[in-house]
Length: 128
View 1 (cartoon, rainbow, N blue to C red):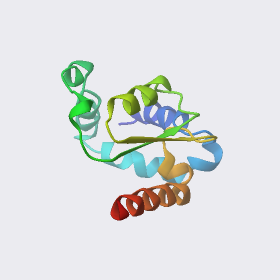
View 2: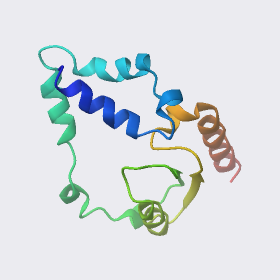
View 3: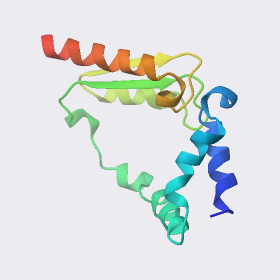
View 4: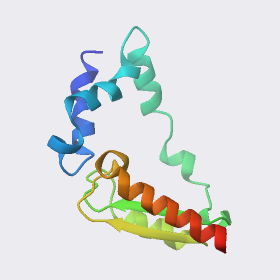
């Protein structure tokens, strides 16, 4: 696991806009916990290979007829921002909210804003 820890730590720090604030050492340790022990590396490898582009090739998002909320951190360094537009254009009832100053891990960077957005989305759907 020691070999994987720096890799995972780098990924976590690269997933937030401000690693010093949003990704403290204690939080990194919590993320690392599932990958400790004799099965830790196997768990990490299984997770890393759990989905591929081929798995998604036949998915037709246009067949999803439920409201969808896509939250996109504008500081996401891992996935091209055009993916958010592609998702929204493919989802019949999709709504996109772009979040400035936030990376990939919205729950870690701004949990209050995440809760506000989710509650608002659910309230709107309950009324409709």
